[in-house]
View 1: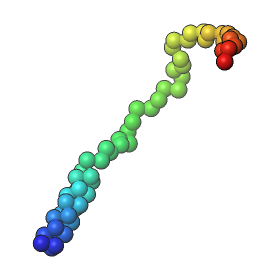
View 2 (view 1 turned 30 degrees about the vertical axis):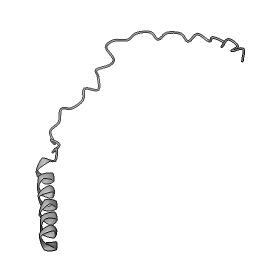
View 3 (view 1 turned 180 degrees about the vertical axis):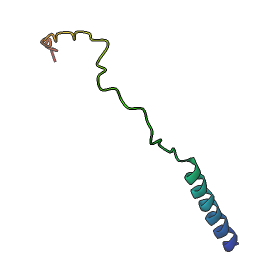
View 4 (view 1 turned 60 degrees about the horizontal axis):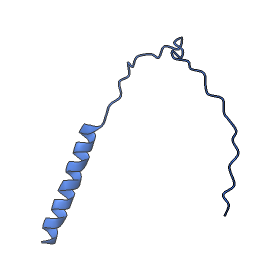
Length: 59
């Protein structure tokens, strides 16, 4: 009984490692180079921050 459980757990761990080895995302060495000359296309002016004072709560 104990040997069956041990064998089952060890076999499941080994299967897990085999699946992990084959399912890893491999990075490609020939990735596209990022065009450094391309800038921001849509430039929108930011809103000016309005400083507002908080009203008294009355508590």
